Image (cartoon, rainbow, N blue to C red; front, side, top):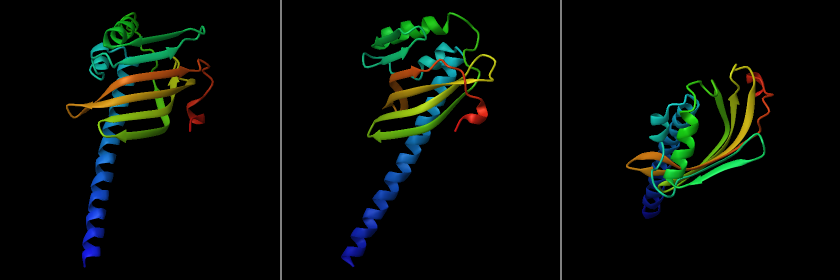
Length: 163
């Protein structure tokens, strides 16, 4: 009987852990969608609300000319991205598709790596970007701590080719 009770307790805890993980993963996916959509729509306030505003913030990406941009701390991240988001009101990428997503949650931290296909301005061809993001749970919400994006800049994929 004791073995049955121990087994039952283990199964209960495992079930609770799986439900919590699924709930966190859904919230993380929603945060990913909001942060990316806000950036591509050039909605600074919505984008900024997705981030931690402290010295742990970090962002980095490569540029098509072979250079890169990197900022550490919220002030640097904010300055770089705000200037880019507010430099034009034109939508940058009208569509994006995230695939091959791997989410790992450890307590109040999560890291995510995935492939993002972003449409060029006409929305007919997509480029592949390899992305790695770190999020921290703050007040029950998942907020971005770090984003690293490695862009291909070769818009060669049709929507039908993305898997």
